[in-house]
Amino acid sequence: MREILPNAMFRVELPGGRVLSGHVVGKARALLTRLVPGDEVEVEVASRDAGFCRIVGRPRDTRGR
Image (tube, rainbow, N blue to C red; front, side, top):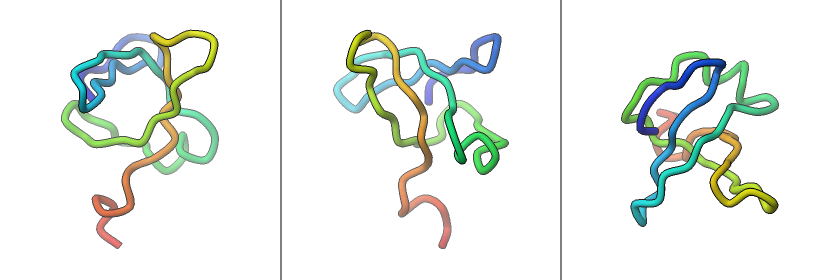
């Protein structure tokens, strides 16, 4: 994650350097209460708008379980 935007939006940078806007959805909203710039997150890119994504969780290897 790159930066926090107003209205619960986030700017996410993909490994290829592409930057998207997105928001946290579903069960991840309760589990990801503390997102800070620099956190790694899993995203789903919207099919209709290539500049928007949904944050669905954190990668399994960074959860500490």
